[in-house]
Amino acid sequence: MASNYTLSPSWSLSKNAYDQPFENPLKKVAPVLTFDRDLPPSYDDSSSAEFKTDKPLPAGDYILEAEGVAVNGKDMSGDIAWFTVTDIGVIVKHAPDRALVRAINIVTLKPVANATIKMGYGLSFDTTKKTGKDGFASFPLEPVYSDDYSDRNLDFMAISGPQHAYSDVSFY
View 1: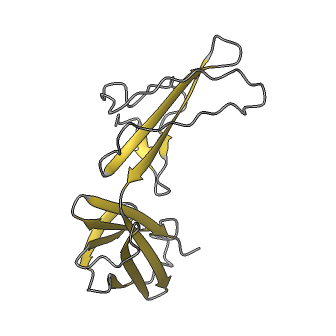
View 2 (view 1 turned 45 degrees about the horizontal axis):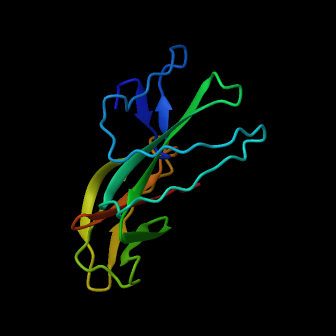
């Protein structure tokens, strides 16, 4: 990503300098897939289209970029979003002094043993544990009610082979 964008703790891409024109941070990245759809113009923003790939996407993180011509036929409009393709899910429950994390296979709903669970604040994963046979890992938590952590989410990542998933919790 270009340096004039920041991935925020809420997992959104934010522009750092709003006084400069938009520059697409993905313009040098080759697309995995492209789709073209003609949508009828709609003045109430109700136009939509569904997309289906010919084959499943491999596990991983993907960025979606949508572009289109505005209703006036001249102006371009677009949006950028991201999503993850995965078979692993991560469930997080927390108390002031502990986080209990469970990795599950979201296809079979069975626990994922020996998954790597990473935890950290502000998208900086600095603590790692493995899940047991039951898919659980437990993390002791330091008090977060200081100015240093009051505006940060506690982030988690579960990894098992090529599969991974994200979750976060807020203390407010």
